[in-house]
Every structure is written in C-alpha cells, then in structure tokens.
Amino acid sequence: MDESGEWPEHLDPIVEEFSSCFDSMERYELLFQYAKKNPTPLPMEEWDDDNQVHGCQSRAHVSCSLDERGDFILRGGADAQIVQGLIAITAIAVNGMMPKRVTQLSPRFVDEMGLRSSLTPSRANGFLNMFKRVKEEALLLSEG
Image 1 (tube, rainbow, N blue to C red):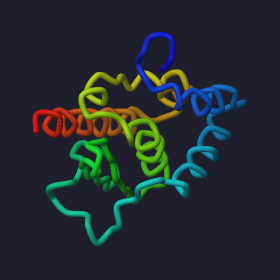
Image 2 (image 1 turned 180 degrees about the horizontal axis):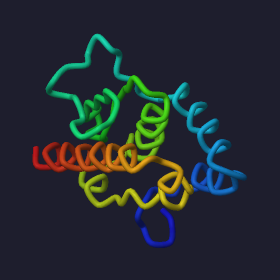
Image 3 (image 1 turned 90 degrees about the vertical axis):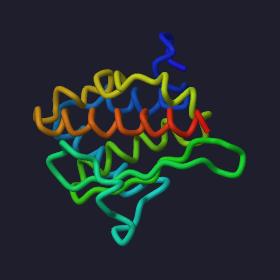
Image 4 (image 1 turned 120 degrees about the vertical axis):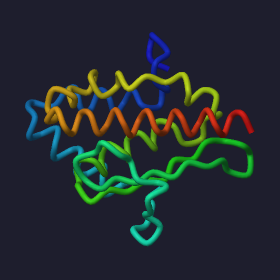
C-alpha cells in the first residue's frame, strides 16, 4: 500500500512508471500499452445497459464479481483506448482484493501518475464515474 493506504502496494511500480513520464503524450502512449494488457477484459458481446458506466464520454462497461475465494474481480472494456487503459490499471489495482478493501480505495493514484492533469475534464469525470461504480459494486458484493 502507498504510505497513505489509498491504493495497493502492487500499484506503486505503475504509479512510478507514469509519474516519471516526460509529458502527456508519453503518458498516453503508456496508457495505450496498458489498454492492450487489460488483465480481465469484458468482451463487447457482454456489454449491456446494466454494466455501462454512465457519464463517460466513450462507451465504457464494467462488470464486478467475486472469484471462488471471495476475492474481487473487475472486468471491463471501452471503445476508447484511453478509457480502456484506465480500466485496465484499475483492474490491476483491485483484482484479488477483498471487496470491503476495494470500497476503501481512493482514485488518487491517477493524480500521482500525472494522468488526471493529462485528461480532458470529460475523461477525468468519466474515470471518476467508473471508479465510483466499482466501489459501489464492491460494497454490494461485500454485503453478500
């Protein structure tokens, strides 16, 4: 966990990788690479109204569940590579955690990466809507 406990420790190398980028374009290129490495993609054929993230500039969908051990799993997809990259990094952060712990996370890692200042206000708002949705789903799953 970072010193403040706002995100899991295993996200630290990714935060560092982004924060050491020279400029916004370099951050976008890195984000595009993460978009291709989404650990738990949600195929387009599973996109529907129930898993759509509203308030997002592009089409973004997230599906949250628990694995057989009761650990949180975020699956997601988007039609924009920037959003897909943000979903992928969020999945890397939360997958395998207990759902109660997911509800306690902060999206501040995006600020530390230097990404929020690189995003348009609309994209930044869409990311926050997606992150809020993931936390809401985690709360529902933690309540059983």
